[in-house]
Image (cartoon, rainbow, N blue to C red):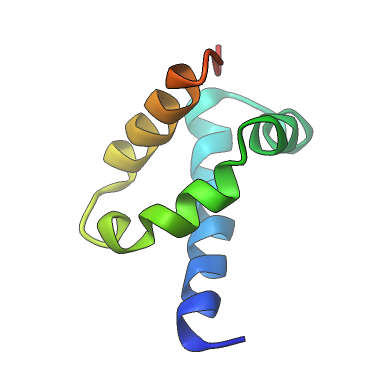
Amino acid sequence: MNDRDKEVLNMQLVLVQVLSRSWNKTFSELAEIFRKYDVLSYIDISYENYNSTGNQGIVDDIQEYIELQGGSVA
């Protein structure tokens, strides 16, 4: 695993906590959303942009990504 992969994994783990609190979802509910909309891959693709974005901006971006696919976090 290279350095970038480790940093992406760390960001994904941190965002699980952030999104769980922001969306008031259990980890199980969040895992289902992540699988359905391939959120972990999206975080990997967006990693460089997310480095200069605050948590709320990331939460909003991921929510928009899910909604653009016809999903909802509500």
